[in-house]
Length: 193
Image 1 (spheres, rainbow, N blue to C red):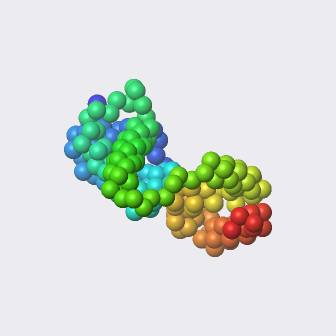
Image 2 (cartoon, rainbow, N blue to C red; image 1 turned 90 degrees about the vertical axis):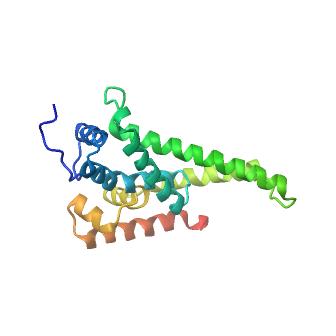
Image 3 (cartoon, rainbow, N blue to C red; image 1 turned 120 degrees about the vertical axis):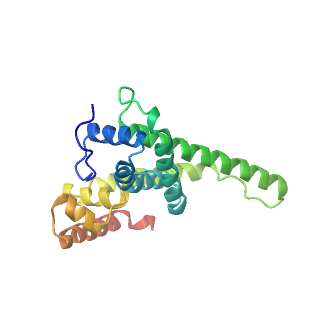
């Protein structure tokens, strides 16, 4: 059934290859797990940070999620979900559980303390929403090349060298595109800083 060797270089990974890796992890294949970890750890961390999880907590949750993949790989069913969806769902659920534990801790802290900050006013949430929309609009003013490197760098958390390799561009070109994009965004969003 699994005659084909498991590929551990995940630079160009298909959903089927990721599913095979998870199935290999279910058989306690440490090389397959190492490949999955290398592939997903930075992606999960970036995913969690986009959800406003602090970097250190995002890294810890990413490790916990991948440890859960090791433990529960036998429960993976490629007919129900792709490997990426399954793994990111695990990470999302761990983040939710962590947030709930944190909220319970805050409630206990508030009960034990008389000094607490009131919740932010509703207009503060509106301001945040308006800022987010302005940033999205400003991103629309970037060239396609600039937007791609900005997304890879800031939204996926990739290093400039990795972006250069992925896009088959010189490192200087990647850095230049990011610098030009950031200058353009600064011009468009200067009043937000």
